[in-house]
Structures are given as C-alpha cells and as structure tokens.
Amino acid sequence: MKRLLLALGVVSCVLLAQEKVDEVTTAKIRSEEMEHSQIMRIEHMITDRYGPRVTGSPNHEAAVKWAVAEFTRFGLKNAHTEPWDFARAGWLNERAVGFITSPVKENLKFEVLGWTPSTNGTVSGSAIQLIVPQGPEVPVDPNAQAAGGGRGGFGGRGGGPQRLQPTKEEFAQWIAANKDKVRGKIVMVGKQTVVDIMGEPPARRVDDAQNMQRYDPNNPNAGRGGRGGGGGGRGRGGEPDPTRMTANEVRDQIDAMLLANGALVRLNDAARPNGIIVAQAHNAYDVTKTISTAVVRNDDYGRIERLLADGEDVKLEFNIVNHSYPEGKTSNNVVAEIPGSDKGDEIVMLGGHFDSWHAATGATDNGIGSAIMMEAVRVIQSMGLKPRRTIRVALWSGEEEGLLGSLAYVKQHFGTAEEPKPEWQKLDVYFNVDTGTGRIRGASVFGPPEAAAALRPLFMDFADFGVGGISATNSRATGGTDSTSFNNAGLPGVGCSQDPIDYNVLTHHTNLDTYERILPDDVKKDAAIIAAAVWHAANRDQMIPRFTKETMPAPQPAR
Image 1 (cartoon, rainbow, N blue to C red):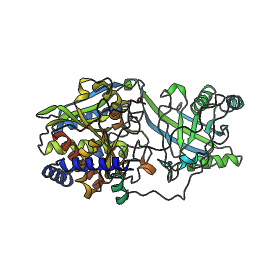
Image 2 (cartoon, rainbow, N blue to C red; image 1 turned 135 degrees about the vertical axis):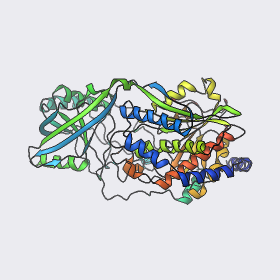
Image 3 (cartoon, helix red, strand yellow; image 1 turned 60 degrees about the horizontal axis):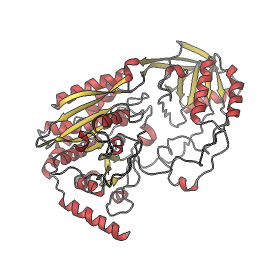
Image 4 (cartoon, helix red, strand yellow; image 1 turned 45 degrees about the vertical axis):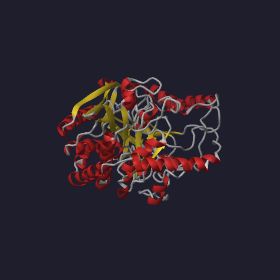
C-alpha cells in the first residue's frame, strides 16, 4: 500500500511539473477582477431586484430574462434559455401577516411554507396544540457519532434522541381522537424544540494548515469531506418495521386530517435559535393537499405553547396570500457562450444554480454562486481573451427541488458514460460554486488522479488567496449541488469548497440569506479563481483526463 501511495505521489508530481499555467494571463485576470469588479452590482440585481427566485415563479422567470440580457450586454454569444419540464405549477408568497390578539398583542415572526395555499382572507381562531405520538428511541450507533456534523450544531436544531414513528394502530387512534378538535382552529403541530443557545459557533475560516493537508496529493486521507462527500449512512437500524408509520405518512395524514376537518392554519416550529427560520416546500408541491402553513419563529412558538399550558385561550389572526402559476410547469435554464477557436467544438462549462427558496432573497444560496460565474465570463470577455475551447456558462433552475434543471440539461445534451450522446465526448470539464460567500479553499473533480493533477497548478497559483489545491473523486452519486449531475453522467464535474463563514448556521435556506451577508473581497477572489481556472482548461492542449470505459465507476441512479 505504501509503495502504491508513493507511486501515485510521484505520478502527481511529474504531472504537476509538466502542467503549464499561463501566468501572464492569470495575473491580468486577477488585476481586472480586483480593480474593476462588477460582482456586487450583479449580486445586487440577482437578490434585491429579482429575489427570491423560486423555480416556476414569475420572479425566477424575470431573473432569467435579465440574465440573458446581461450575458448579451457582456458580449457573449448565443445567450438563450433552455426549457425543461418542472412538472408542477410554480408558487410564490405575496404577503403574510400574523398576530397574537389575545390574551396579549404581538406581531408573530414567521415564514410561509412553500406550495401551501392562502388563507381565506383574514382568519382568526383559538390556537390548539397537537402532540404527535412517537415510538421508542432509536438506538445510537456509536460508529456514526463521529461522522455527525453537517448543517446542525450551533444555530441548528435542538438535540435530543431520535425516535421511531408510531405504529399504524397508535396513529389511527390518535387521528380519531383529534380530528374533531381542529375545526375553526389554528393548529400547532408538535412541541416546541428546545434549541441550544450556548453552543460555540464553528470557525468561519478553514484552518490553513488543515486545508493544505486536505488537498496534499501525497496525503492518503486527502480529499475527504466537503460537500457531497463521505459521512454517516442513512440506515439507522436495518429493515423498517412494517407495523410503524413512516415520517412521510405521518406528515401526509396530519395534513389530510387538518384539511378534511376545517382547520384554519397549520403552525410548525422553526426549531432554530436567534430568529432563524427555514421554510422550504410542502412535500406534495400541490396546494390542494394541505392547508395554509406557517413556520413560526421558535421564540413565538414557545410563547404560545406556554400560554396554552397556563390554560389561556390564545387567539391568533393570519392573512396569507400565496399564488400558484400553472405556466411554471416549464422552467428555464440560462446558457451563453464565448466561442472557441481551433478547439471550438470542445466545451468548458461553468455554472451555478440561479433558483432559491423564498424566506429571503437567496444571496448566499446561490445568488452569489451565479454572480461569480457571470462575473468570471464577463472578465474573460472584457479582456478580449480568445479561448481555444468554447466557454459555456449555465445558470440552473430547480436545484433546490433536487438538481432538476442541471440533470435535465445533462440528460438532453450529454447522456451518460453508458449511453453517451455526441456531446459527451466534447464536454471537457464543468466548474460549480454553491456554498456561500467564503473564499474558495479548494475543489474536487470527478476523475482519476490525473484530472486533479491537471488543474492543481492553476489552483495553487492562488495559494495566496488561501487555496489548498484540488482532489479527485470517483463518486457518481448526485446530491448537494449541480456538479454532481455531471459526475453522475461520468463527466468531470468540479465542485468548489469554500470558507463556511455563516453559511451552515445562519444563511443556508434561511430568512437571513440576504445581500448583507456577502463579503465583497472574498467573492471577488472567487471570481478571479474561477475565471483563471476556466481559461486554463479552455486552452490546454489536451482535455482534462477522465475515466476510461474500463475504469469508469459504476453508475448510480440520479435522485
């Protein structure tokens, strides 16, 4: 094993020595971006003017038209939209207000759950709280604890043991006992989550030494972690118990009960500290399957719960106006190009998802990722650079619902390694940014070690920006972000890793994801890195190395 690792290290070092970087152009790209950047103006338009950009909504479609016009204004060619089937009506909240009217007066802080209906004008009623039955605690797997983390922790949901769902018999009895209580009521579903207000916030910057070690090609543990990387599995104890409900069944049957029995509004606990609210979408994406639903700030939810426990008749009032858009069943990606020269039939792509959730304006997720890509091609075009390969930029929709826009594009244009379309052989590499406002600290590329070696010298040219390098991955699993749509097809997708700043604890999918959370110096550096990486790939003599037919990892189903 040691000999193998040594051999791989030697191969990587040889490739590193052979790989040439256009230092002059890279320096000019740095200068252009750091001295004449337009990235914050682009971000302002994406967020303040067109946010939130929920897939299928008029906001998103307006943003799409603006982006096509911007790419054209930059001087890119063939700026256009490419439709794909979203298969559901679009949705957007227009306005929402809620109050405690008795025994106290208070404005409630909440966000509306996506793809839920409006209230019937202003509705008022007494609050009741339903405590959903649960099964026994799930045994803790000691081997999985070390792999925890993710987006929980400080600013995340409260701790406590995981529990199984109730049995089907228990839940049927609970429904029968509660269905006649909800008519004309505003229904709190579940107890308040006790959130951690004393936890230490995680570091906003990645440690430099750890980052360099993470991307060291001679480190046998290099490349582990990062978005869409390893971690604990989903299994929690073998085969599911057929006598128990699933979480989806519990959720759906509660909604059906509330709808059938005349409840006015459903209230969910945001279950986050510091006023953070995450409100995504109802799982059915169908406003006829549920009632108007608000995700209420944890503090307000707890106050109502405690007043109810005192025996108070807590009166609430809501007015929620939502709209469905049948035309949103067809959504659009945005595509534009800088034409290549002698290798113009080969394509280097860069992109990010343009859509967002609706609780804020989608600044860090992923307005800034889109702005970085728009700025990168603007810089290349404004400098009059003429790439050998065609540079194609894409802004995806439907990412938040499951990478739908990029998966549709990859399927239409490239196919898969097993069933390739003609363009599959012509796609050189795809670059993606989708983890907030922090500096790019490294990346992973789907391919053999030689793929990382081909890009490493360019990334290490930005070591003074904090970049540690690039590693290779052989995972074709989708999840996390749009680069995995390309990996899934057997194509070289590059996913960038960034300093977390506040992404995982404050802004990701939350009501705090606004323009104010963007760090201008960081994102300027990100745009320079991406522009230089794209330029490097577009002008190499050979395409980025990829797996051969014999070494290609086995396909995995797209999610």
